[in-house]
Structures are given as structure tokens and as C-alpha cells.
Length: 385
Image 1 (spheres, one colour):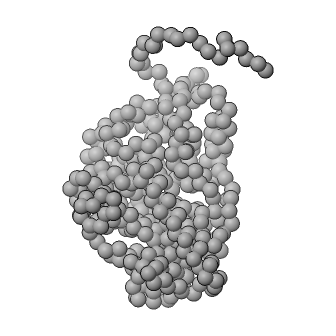
Image 2 (cartoon, rainbow, N blue to C red):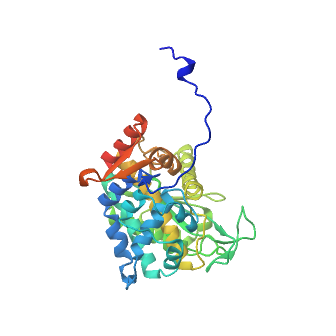
Image 3 (cartoon, rainbow, N blue to C red):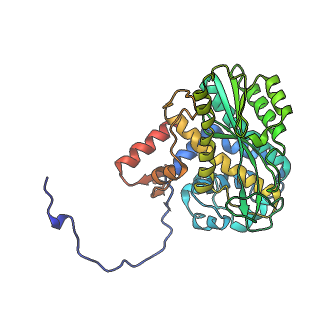
């Protein structure tokens, strides 16, 4: 059908006058998907249980602060002061089950008051969420990748130190060691370390802890471990052999243990090249999340903020795994079985949707624009969450 120019173009009009009113408008309608996901995973109860020992006569519980920080990352915010730009958003309040969001000063102060016990419990919560997913997949083998990533900062935060920093030489930093699951692209656990430690610092105990945790939670599978040569030690190799774990350690000297199926050199090289996907995870956590931001000066507070970033990342992966069937089978590189959209794409296509929250006849209703693509995508994820 031919359309006339009069139906396409319009005359110029004066710039509209601006008026600010409380219209119950939201810029993040897509959070309704995560609201349903949080309820299915019972995340609120678990998070609040992980820090219930800290709640003594406070207006806000520490669990609400953790949930707020997870949502903070999902929305694409980095600095704590950016909370001011969504503190009146009705969908954020609905997701967090709050009538009033805490101020920046309150969130910052409470973040500094977390303790080591709450860190351990949140790490356990994250590990449990990852292995629960592995338990539903009926995998023949599970591949764990180990590597470190630098978190730089200009402030003198507790525990930071000047160490190897390829991009920001001389800057103070943390150097956490991560364990990721190759088949799901999720972060299983993290070992927090100062920026001036060697790669092998604490690696032996951390590798064995992760292997034993997954083995105890997902019995009957073959375990593979991939890592850099910096983590190499004879006693670690002996322990991996004793545990019956297949492993590779990269150049300058590559070691292989009990790799029964990877007998061809080409397959071995491809298998080890699959470690590159872990670098993609780090890039996403830093560029699309807020992993490279150090919010407070305390060691424990920065640990909690990092864990909130990992939980947000794992939740986005969990949502996509629930909504879509695996697109791949196990490959020589051991890449994830799903083709995941990055957090930035999920943010643009789902989360950042304008809407209005109303209660006609006492029924809470979220109204959005009748965009066919948005409707199809949102309902798809809602049905799966």
C-alpha cells in the first residue's frame, strides 16, 4: 500500500513544556520477569536468611540491601549514588517488596557492616543455585575453569594492593580467583585476594574445594579442570589424580591427566581453547555488570558487592536456560550448551520497557505499549520463569 508524504511527515512543533508528576510510571517494566524468577527460586527468603544474624533493630534488613544491589546491577547501574535515579520506580519497589527504597547513604553504610559469616552464606547460596541447575541437566561430564581477574580502584580500599595490572599499571587492586562452569557459563565460586598475590596463592585449596563441592552435589559425572600454568604445583596434580579428575594446564608446559577421550592433539588443543569463554564471562561482568567497581573502603563490603554481581549474572543465565532449550551438544571446546544473550541485550529488549502500574478494581496491573516484539519476548520469558 502506497503511503502519502502527508501521512509520514509532520510539521515542526514547539518544544514541549516539561512537567513532573507522580504518575506511577516505570522505566523497567521487564523486571516483572525477574519478580517471577525471584519467587520461583525463593531468592528473597534465602538472601535474608543468609544475613538474618545481622538484623537487629534496623529499619531495613540486610537481605533487602543485597536484593537491591542485585537489581542495581541488572538495571545497568554501577556507582551506589545512581540509586537516586530509580528510587521512585514502582516496579523496583514491587520486586523488592518495599514501599520506600533506602537512600544511598543507608545502602553504603549497611554494605560496610556485613561480616565474614554473611559472605560465606552468600557464597553458599550462589554455589547452591549453580549446582541445582547442574543437577537438572543430567550431564555426563562437568568442566570447571579457573582463572583470576583484576579489579582496579583509585581509592585505598581495605585489602587492595599494587600488583600486576596490565591495563592500569600502578593502580591498587584486588585479584580474585574465579571458578566457572563451562556447560552453563555461570560463576560457581570466587576466592577473594589482594592485588599483590601470586596466581597460585590459595589456588590449591580453592580448586579442590570447588571440585569436591560439585562432586558431592552432582554425583556420577566425570570432572574436568582447566587452568593456567601459574596455578601449577606437583601436589595439586597429585591431588587431582587422587580425586580422579581430568585436567589440563596451559603453556608454557601443558599437562594432561587421564584424558581418555582427548587422545588426538587437535582435540586437546580445541579443548583447552575453550577456556577463552571464561574471558568472555569476565568481560561481560565488567562491561555490562559492575565487577570492576569498588563501592566502599571495607574488605567485606566489597566482597558482598562482588557476590551481588555474580548472583545477577547467574540469574540472567538461569532465566535464559529456563526459557530456551540447549542449542548445542557437548563440543570439543566444552563451550556452554546454550547460546546466551548478554546482560546488555536482556536489558535493552526486556528490562528497560516503559509502563504504568495501576490498580483498577483492586487488581495490580502493569500496562505497556502494544509492541509486538516486546509482547512476544516478555510473555515467552514470563511463561518460563
